[in-house]
Image (cartoon, rainbow, N blue to C red; front, side):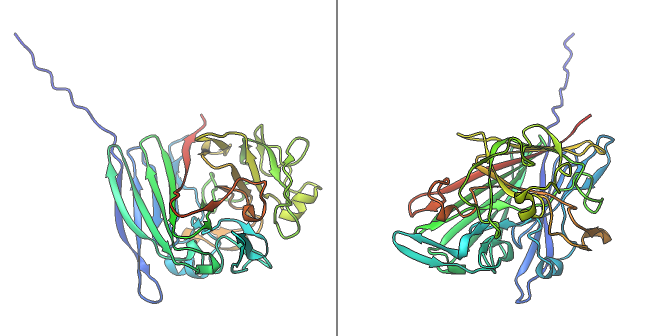
Length: 364
């Protein structure tokens, strides 16, 4: 007798849903995109600033918590901006005096950080509404966000067509891919500016998190946090995270660079190259939550939330000093004025393309 056995294959499914998140003062609608996978990982993105507003992951006991800082409503993003979860651009990080020269012509950018230019200027990519195209394909889901930055915006030359793609996979990865093209030579450096607290947002500071950064060198800064041009060794300094160390272990060390950053606010020169390589690993010892960051970029800005001050966050939580950390994968700050740094110039006919992968996990 022939027995027929039915084999049911259950595929891991990742989904994306869209819903309203309010309107800009002039009436433009802002959308919320929610990505979920079968493990319960949930990531929320709004079209304002292409901002990640929530990332929910489990601890070692299976309890879920939101691990990124942010706000519950659009008005708070408009009025209390600290770049929470946003895409920073057209040029992330700082440019000295807000100036650079291309082919003999000097361009003056907006100066919004003292005498310097920071994260794209007064109205950078974090403060505009992007167009969203959600997708579900194979076993992953995500959203492509697009923004056209006009010629002269914040002082930058060229019309830049920029995109960022967020993809949630069944392997609990958030894949972030950046792209851009231009019609005039311009400088481009995009990054993701989420503040993480793996104990859960609003659950104290991040000083006990164990940080590993795959870097032998870092770029020291002057009083305005502009790189001096030196690539200094991390060995023997508070910047040596080649082996895991608590973020708070040396954050108040008697060191000139620590004093200038009021803690960590520095670009680390990654040791990998030639494709996707390890940037950092972080473990929160109480919950066991882990974060692994890989990137195609040459650097990562480690910011320990030194300028956060007591203020409201999500769900009635209060965010205080060092209640979140950032790992901003990037080209180096002030690269347009530092010929020895990896170049950031994009010309017509070229395509800007970088990739960063955030993998969420648990240490047992």
